Image 1 (tube, rainbow, N blue to C red):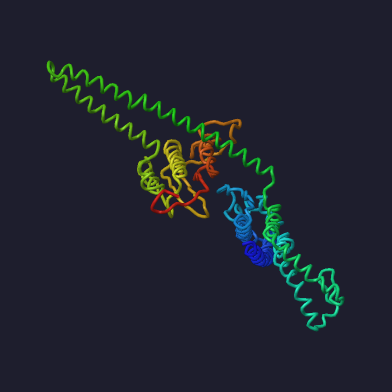
Image 2: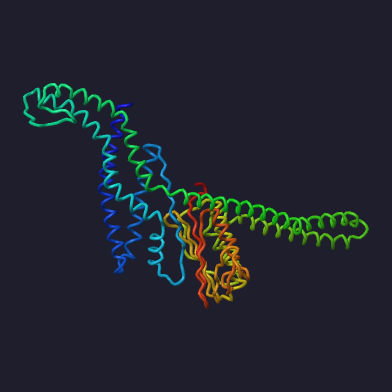
Length: 438
């Protein structure tokens, strides 16, 4: 078993060396050429794809590090900020990748990987080859082959005594090759030095997760209070009144049948109203169509209930995780409701898309626009942050907090006069098309 691990580590090292040399040289060269072309224009198109290739290359190295040696190399790429007013799409993508510190860490890593990474990956197989050479050279010398000034480490083939010591040194090298798995780990530890985000970035990430966790807890508590209030003021009150009517009916049914019949009709109406309120409450907690048919059909059903025409485009290739579906659905619901109330829009639209492990939803309207997403807690906040309602607003920060629980982002593009576009983006896993279980 130990011999097998040694040979496997050596074989993996050879493969890693080839990948490190060829892949890193190619990607480093492409990146430099692409960055140079930024000054003349084509680089704005080529840089994002080249950076994506580099990230996939680094992700494969992270996967091998964990699978082969148990070393975890964290990745911390900044999420896409979504559409930004005044910038074409290619410029936004290029600006995003160039402003991400991970891009420059990986560029430096490519430079190191093609040299030091290549050598450290070869160490396991070189150790085995060195050990075998310690037995081959003496055999050749003793067979009468003239090796001239051939050396083996610090031993010379021209000295019979030193030739006799070569197998000893070779055996020591082969014995040391038992540490090949640890030598292979050296390659990945070197990669981790350059690919791991600085502690400051990780600390900011932890702070962000702590903040979104608190927001999620607060939102859950507020939702529970809303449900209790709606039950107490709505369905519960109607059911209590219906119980009192039934008691009165019981007392009147013999001596005043007409009055009892009137109360029965009122109780029937109260029961229907209580049932409607309970259905609305359940739909507000988790719509049945969302649970049964997924986000696609739930958004389309929501669009049909809107007081203005809403066009829904795009299809998701499968179901998403239930919490993600719920957050996305209620975010779209809130945006469409606010649009209908405040945007003075003739129509609205929703576009659904899933690509590269991210759910992207764009909600737009042809209203008057002028929405500016104010800094959270910033001064001068007026209004409610509704799409289509001109001014500087903070209400959309509630949606930001909801999406932040899932590392999602929200971007607003709303020039004066419209149209208003609100883009939601959530990193998430895709489930089976036939089930919501991932």
